[in-house]
Length: 329
Image 1: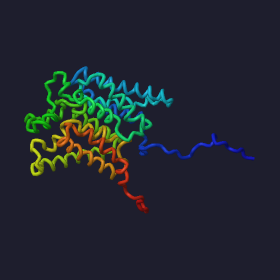
Image 2: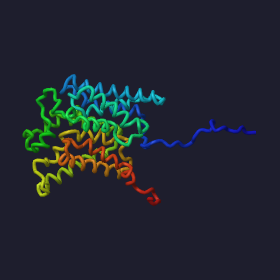
Image 3: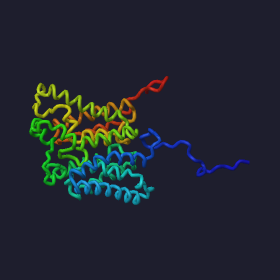
Image 4: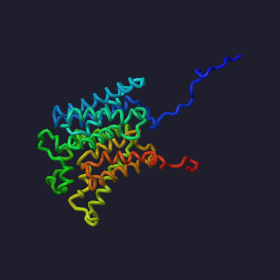
């Protein structure tokens, strides 16, 4: 005679989790470890350029994010995931968008909002519809734009903010032959996002490790270059001041464009997983980046562009190839 199984003894065979569903043998800890390694060159370059102030912002943002997640999980009685490295990485990504002179209270407030408003209220890692670091950055930028302005809190640095110059004085106000210096990060801007060469090295490492898909960075950068080229060629015919439409390559060498392309637009939870959707998402974000820089009130449009494009992720994921032998619904 078989013993009847109670409901508590029956184990579920199928469990539905929140997206993303793609699995490449990575663990969360492994992915976060790769992210930290990829961020290391830009972090070192930021400390080299800005000194102890850069380390202060990174350490404070990362520390507050880890502490906030631990306290939040304790309050809700959830199993602690503070040691998986996700809060640490989220804090570093947020810090890389801040100026070195950001006051401590702004860094701490933004870090708390990054974790709670950007991720935990939606259920934690993997459930957030928007990139958490961008949520915290946007809240601080809208609330305290002066303290988020690298020119206003530049700690007496002699470097220039090329985005401000191009926005208000035209791209011809940049020093002649400044492309190399811009590539090496000799400009005011986000703590680690303006060190293009270091950020690019980290981004290529993530691609080589398979931590991010190539489609989104490629589509994003292509969208920036194509839209920039259109306005560069036809901006005057549209009635736009030619000084407001720089050559396309200057969009890549200034601001957080490259950093956003590899580290923020590729956020697994808030970006599409279907290849067609990735291309559409990246192209839209690149298009919006140029539009915000030319017509918007904020000089660096890349973070806002990704936030806006992320709102369409559920729709972009519908752009996919039909199953073999089947029809799309």
